Length: 374
Image 1 (cartoon, rainbow, N blue to C red):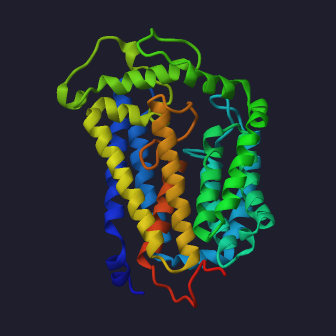
Image 2 (cartoon, helix red, strand yellow):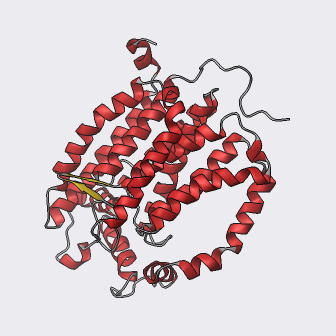
Image 3 (cartoon, rainbow, N blue to C red):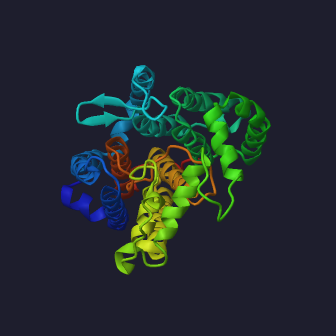
């Protein structure tokens, strides 16, 4: 396929949604630089965005099927990073980053994508996972990185693997009764997971159910959700950018990890309810277009990649926005394309490149219909 033909077939509406979300995120990060003392994270994020362009170009130009023979090797090769990071210095109570000078690598971000590639390679054209015993291998592929990430501990990133697994199994043809059985077993294991959780993780879940609207600023883990809702509410309908409204109480603007985990709050403060509604609308359009790409792709490997990437981004968005408005516990998780962070933006851009790649090549030569079983 020529370059001109490739560019003609790229789903540019997906690109437009992604660029719009990136721009909105940058305005939130810029607002954080205004409110809080610290490094110029807006400038760093712009740098990361520029560095992500070559990564996007490479993953778009190279046919996605070229990654298929080495997908399992990429996954296995990325797992040692999750072990190395356990020996790094703690930041914010967790070991999640490996520092390389100007750039901090978050291995979990890399493993999310290699996991999707490896699982897609395993599931394509197979029917053994349609038997209950055949689910063992996909669950092992999932549980290994999940367990290593929980050791950091990074509950937010670990939560993403299970929805991606189930979505890809469903797309590949997993039986409904098996899916329901596994779900029931997972619920039955909830007490075990609760016992194994750290005191901090339990405290964040308890804080979710201890919220009281209109109460004075609480302490402990309830402070995070109180502050996130406070900052979000300060924007009102149109936001401080249009209304020009500011309050003198500096403490009202205080927010931990504002540029990363809680960037949605800063977007709401700057652009108001209208801005947050537009942001969520862009995500809905982006995910809908991604699922449309998956539905129109006749090649199993590409379809599974598209489903995995959209599920990953969708789960991140639901958890991130849910915790900012007090509907879900506060966990460390970024908002795709919007949160500050080089690893998050770079790997999201790589995922975007793969999604566009699949969308531009939906009709690969395939013998027979994929995912058809007797």
